[in-house]
Length: 115
Length: 107
Image (cartoon, rainbow over all chains, first blue to last red):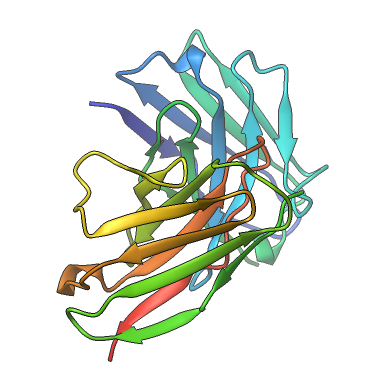
C-alpha cells in the first residue's frame, strides 16, 4: 500500500526555520513529481510547492517564494520542505502529496509559528 | 498562476437532494481538474480526476463534468456520509492551485 509519512512539524518562533520530511514507500518515488500542500486552522487547502521528478524543477506559491525550499532525495525516497523566515500565517497542517500519475496524500504534520 | 473560483462557499441540503458545485478556472486547463472531499482532521480524499473520471472505490452518485474553464461536481442523491467540504484543484501545471472550498451542510 502506498504510504507518505510526514515528520518534522512542531512549534517554532517567528523568524525561525524548520525542515519537514516526507518518507514515501510502496511506489517508484523517483518517477513522480511531488508536492506540499498546507491548510491553516479552519481554512482551505493551499498548494505550497512542487518538485519535478529529477528535482531540477521547483515551483512555489507566491506566499512562500524566497522563504521555502523544496527538494527530494530519490535514493532515500524522501521529500523535503525547508522553511525559513517563518511567520504566524505559515501556521498550518502540511501535507505531502503526489498528484500527477496517481493521487496519494500523507496524514499531515502540524507547524505552529508562535512566540 | 491559474486562479480557481469555486461556488457556492456553503451549501445547505437534505439527504436525497441533488447537489451541484461549480469550479471556474482563470484560463483553460483542458480537463486537468480533480475534486476532493475532506472531513475534519483528515487528509483530502480524491473523488474525481481528469474532470470526469471516478476514482476507484468512490460511489457512483459522484460525477464530474466540464472542460476548459468550467467544471461541475454533482452528487446525485446526497447521503449522510457526504456532509463534508469539497475542493477542486487544477493540475494543468505544477502550480496546482485549489478552489476555496464548498462546505455541504445539513439543512
